[in-house]
Image 1 (cartoon, helix red, strand yellow):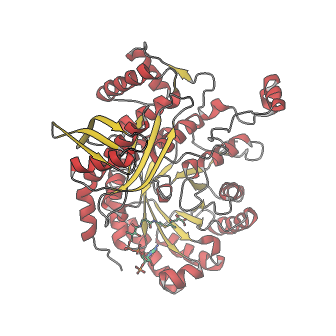
Image 2 (cartoon, rainbow, N blue to C red):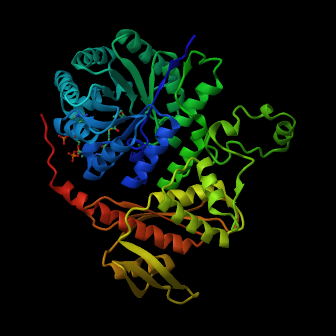
Image 3 (tube, rainbow, N blue to C red):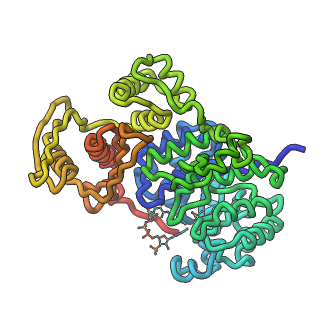
Length: 519
Ligand SMILES: CC(=O)SCCNC(=O)CCNC(=O)[C@H](O)C(C)(C)COP(=O)(O)OP(=O)(O)OC[C@H]1O[C@@H](n2cnc3c(N)ncnc32)[C@H](O)[C@@H]1OP(=O)(O)O
Ligand SMILES: CC(C)C(=O)C(=O)O
């Protein structure tokens, strides 16, 4: 008997980006979308096109490039949002508009300030208008977990009649227990049988997002919304890798179902998201955490040596983690071996990108003894997500004697000219950032600074993430920098954030003059 496919709807680029500190620039989002396509997700929620000109731009560019996944944009039940979503995804080969409105009494009364009839009217109008742009419309009863099921049936009938083909029942605040989600999904699936696909979108406030999603599948849900590494608003969303690997590992229970996910792309996708957002999964995170396949204690090690399955329920290679082949290439490696390694890691680079990545790889190999797959992943990610460089770091010299004044001399290239200046600060990083400000004329406010080592060892690459505002009325910008030297990585991250800001500046200006149309 052929298995039923559970559609995997990935919302890393939309709900995942709602994780504090997880903002991504357009180039980064395009790279993530390409990897999600490789992973085999059915639907990529590429953003919320009406949220900002930057979001619109990212959704449009993803829609132009992705061929094998449906591209979706979220939209409130507001004409202007739906128009933005429809226009942003217009070029996609397969496209969907996902519109939503809250259906719980608490949201309707206090947030929307609408009575239930008005909510139904808005929902119907939204779906009808969305159908003017696409055939595939998803409607979400926001806060379904706390909504009255009778009211959800009423609104569901209305939106199905208006043209929605997927009904999503989000547990927006992660309040429900698995048996409750199971009961809600069962009742709604039976009610809508043959008329719409029932989907779930479970948040993780009580740590139950994945359990709730599995229970939903067992009770009739045929689409699950989830994110890589469980990123998302507050405590995050149900993690894609956990849902998919639970279905695969417990095929005895879920024998009738399958997904289109190529599980070997799970680990590379997780690393890409961690490198880009700077948000590392906790070490004990299921499936993709650093310790997920580490056996620390003697009895476990003894068991694994005798027979792996004594303590391993998943083979690392099934998620694309090659435990035996982590040590790679060195300074004597050539372009062919480097290209071959990149292909194995799932990267396809243009000739220019390959040349520039190879140069950076050689610089790294000169200084670092062991180069691991994760070093190469970080290097390529930073190479491929480099946006146009208005400013480029050329050289940097630091002074930080104990009891003295930390100072930095920095040379930056701008419009082909090298500009050098020096400055002091409260610490070396502050001195570097202030000197960059003096040279560029932009005054950045550092909101957050994070450094993590890409792999182990004293000579590990430092991956620095900064969050900076260059204008207090505009959103903070994320920048990443990679180097063996933490100070150099910091300077690169700060200049990266400025370059991102400049590439978005025109769009951000537009945002202030945006008007939001309501019906
Ligand atoms: C559960 C979720 O994750 S929903 C998705 C959350 N994602 C986001 O919010 C994306 C980022 N958001 C934004 O950039 C902004 O909030 C925008 C551009 C969407 C809207 O900005 P603003 O127009 O300034 O509105 P603001 O955010 O202050 O308030 C939201 C408004 O939308 C209304 N609203 C909320 N959801 C809906 C909905 N589904 N349909 C219609 N109206 C809605 C609210 O009632 C409120 O209206 P009010 O201003 O009349 O009180
Ligand atoms: C818009 C919906 C799907 C959402 O993100 C939520 O309810 O959490």
